[in-house]
Image 1 (cartoon, helix red, strand yellow):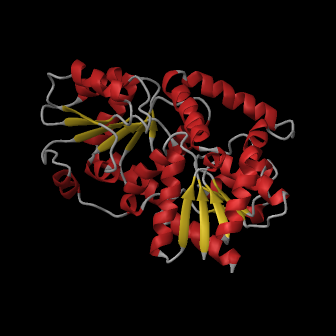
Image 2 (cartoon, rainbow, N blue to C red):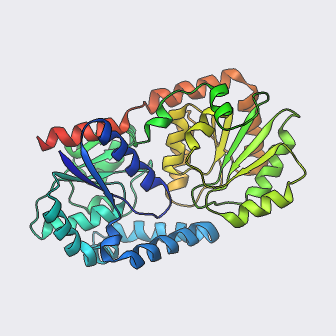
Image 3 (cartoon, rainbow, N blue to C red):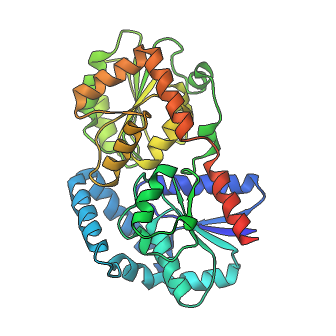
Length: 369
């Protein structure tokens, strides 16, 4: 079987899910290609779309919340979305790409891919198309797309999708695909040694997202105030080099703080940590939960991230802090209270079992055979 996985670089989460599917496909002997649907309009278009989104998330997250709310109100009118009109511009190039490579199915981890495939199918190219939700809520315009099925993160989200008009037969509670490295248990000491981190003391991990979001300095100060002498804090700063430099200057005299630039070793950092504090992105949260790391949510971007945090907290998979001091107190509690940490890990394993990428691909191949 040969599949095309479509994603988009608006944040790292969608791409992480897409790469997880490709990695799993390789293990299953499935030929999988990864592409950004916007790239079919040219590389400049892809860079412009990703850059605009990432600047908005990093600098004015409330604007994203406003756009999200406006999109939800517009979607409720049942009118075709402006997003579809934009994605239709490169649908002809995508259609030609599909004809050349003869894919058996297309799996989209981003709305743009689903919208483009909707137009492709309306133009008469009957390629099976699937959508993967990477947040714990349906986003605006998701359900307007003609797909063979949606892979949702959890069965509890099915009623919301059905109420929006998606037949239950097109819903598959597979989970969000994460890379096998998150699913493979790694002893804490082994992970720390591989990362050249101290073997003693409790490790607090702060993740700011792939683009490096949030007022990390204030949160670091609150966490350091709660930590003991042997504890240490690792900050994954993403691609925000300016924020990383500011943290090094501000806390340069505190040997307990380590600032880590964008890294491909996130699975090891999660396995090495006693507790992680992060903004509630769908992929980041899922990766932490699948790795079995006690989790505190903070710095929600209005919209899907607030829904993610609420879902995780309701299912006992995280604690949701309202401010920096509360986040630090919650992190210290989970790091010190083994019973609370164990209960959270059990809830994570029960609600988000490993193997989501395999379940997605098995469903795609089963329906394509």
